[in-house]
Length: 231
Ligand code: AP5
Ligand code: MG
Ligand code: ZN
Image 1 (tube, rainbow, N blue to C red):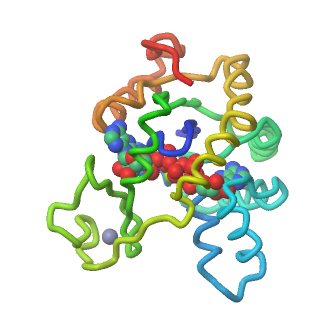
Image 2 (cartoon, rainbow, N blue to C red):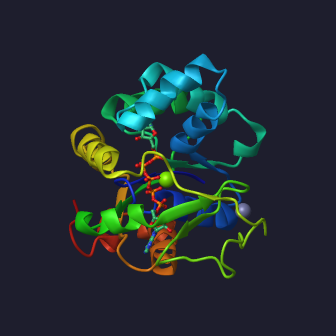
Image 3 (cartoon, helix red, strand yellow):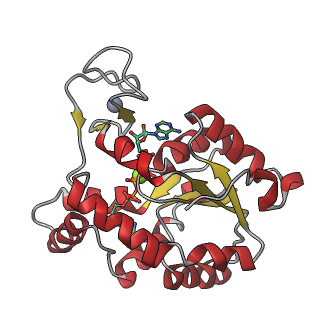
């Protein structure tokens, strides 16, 4: 299963990608997570260049991003597929992905847009935190750990962190970049008959079920899962 999850900041791409990995037995690949991992090393000059871009909320150049994805999907764990979270993010990246997959003799199974009401995204992003031990994501209101300050997944205590780019100024820029650079890939995939849209404002379990249903071959069209228009 090779799929792309699309949606603005806070739509739930990461949340759904980690749920779908279990169902499909393929890894989720988040360009944001890959970049944040590089930023952690203060002696990595590329990491520090990327940090400035992440802090601004703009896009990391294609030559870095596309190469990173190409290398990542060559790993053994991707032999049965992958879930792309945060890539592609522009028409040029979508074109690069198409070319790359063709060269690797691989085919995409679907592109799912997680549709959301933008006013609600600020609340989602402002309340988000994650475990620095295992990466599990949480939310102050929508997904609290069962025991305060302890990760449900890896059971470590005191490991919760918030993202540096989850401040109001950067979030506003990330939204702007989404509208200007990423949204144009929606018609790109519609033209190829690949785009399916799910209601990302439903609770997390319902969103997961809607994505799974949209990816069923019998639901081969976007319309089956497009109750309303988002964006
Ligand atoms: P990235 O890390 O991809 O950030 P993003 O696109 O802004 O998306 P987020 O991670 O903020 O949101 P999400 O959709 O994953 O939501 P989540 O599941 O966490 O990218 C960061 C930066 O890296 C970019 O700004 C750019 O600089 C760079 N970058 C990345 N990819 C790039 C590329 N391809 N090219 C160039 N540069 C690139 O959910 C949010 C919160 O809501 C969570 O707390 C969650 O618990 C909660 N939640 C989720 N679903 C629901 C629900 N249904 N109901 C209630 N709460 C929910
Ligand atoms: Mg994410
Ligand atoms: Zn953890």
